[in-house]
Image 1: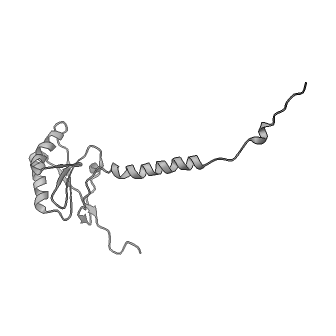
Image 2 (image 1 turned 30 degrees about the vertical axis):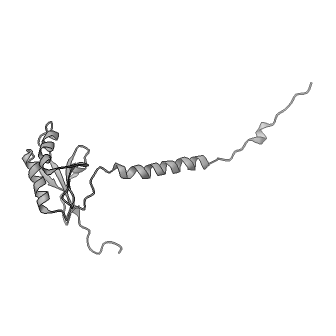
Image 3 (image 1 turned 90 degrees about the vertical axis):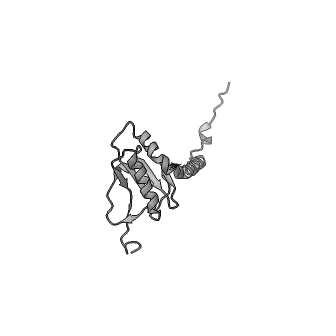
Length: 146
């Protein structure tokens, strides 16, 4: 009786197939490219530029209350558009459990001053004592590209 010897080691492929890994990475890249713009929770506003802005790190916190005023006079509380007449009551409701909190205003540099003033008045009428006006730092002339 003869013994059959199988040589399976000669048929083993030791090359790494990277095609499935590249496919998965490209799908993940596309997913992140699509989702990243959606993660922005701010209304697009071109804020005023100043030489020495006061740092306000509390404005970047998750629980910060930010009122944005756009160029056309639209008022937003977070991402939601709101009428200026309703702003005070809505802020009062949000601050009912945390009094003494600072409200931050992100106003467009070309927004009408009247819209900004009305928003600040509405927030102040809600009982807010501290209002922070957010600005951007002005770039020094001649620094770009040299």
